[in-house]
Image 1 (cartoon, rainbow, N blue to C red):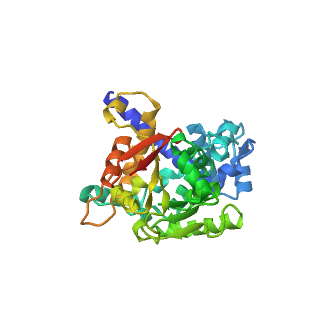
Image 2: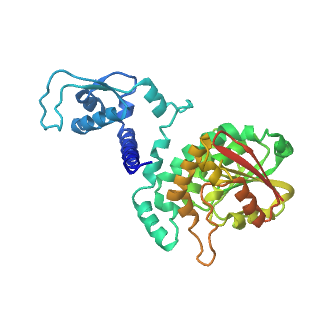
Image 3: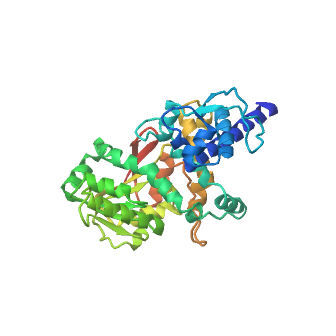
Length: 380
């Protein structure tokens, strides 16, 4: 690629980033919500119905049309305003297409992406400034620095996956014995439970099983406890079926040799020393117990990935980018006297086997959980 072509590529990506910011602005101010239904509206009409500044709307809708997010209909009559627009106002109108509405709002559609648009916004500001320093001193970025809304973003990103897919994962032939145990009444340790939806989902699927929900993040556990209470009041789970613990796994009051299943869902890569986390579960597990680790699917070989044109390349590009900006710096926050394993988001099968072996586990297999994630089955 020539220098000119590289420059043009960067210009396109920067413009794309600005477009994502516009989409988030429209989402947070309620502009896209006010435009639902497909009707074409002028900025004056939208300002009236949405209760927003017409001049700001004028600039936002014009920019969004240039990005291809909105349908544009030119006006023909010059308009007089109390401001002087950079480009003359002629009564243009704008509409949100049914396709764009589906992408932004229809959570049941496979094309829904409205929630994920927020992700890049969490990586700017204070976390980015700390990340620059972390590159220089090999430190980390605290999870809390990404803001109080980030756990909510994670919750919404993952809750539907757990609610709809856990039951399917446990129908896998390799897990039929585990399913039988949990159906009769087993014990699950949901380690790194976050806001608790994985705990609720497994408890709902197996009403005779007790679930220990463990997370050391106070903000996440506060929300988890609210979710647990709602799940009980809504008869999703039984009272006291889910037992919350705001602490590390080894600090939780769970009897040794009592656990049938340990779940680590989309969280092991964020931990300072994943091998120690797995090792902390060894004594808790029954002899035939296992650990299920859910992570994004990533290849064992980077050179092979770079030479391929498979869809995996796009997924790993996403995972590696998020790893740089969030997961790797978060997993490097820990005690200064012990180095972080610093795995990052891209947890390949070979790396999982290495990490598990250091934690005292000799058997690691995996199967596809969905089009983006793999489920690792770890046993002693």
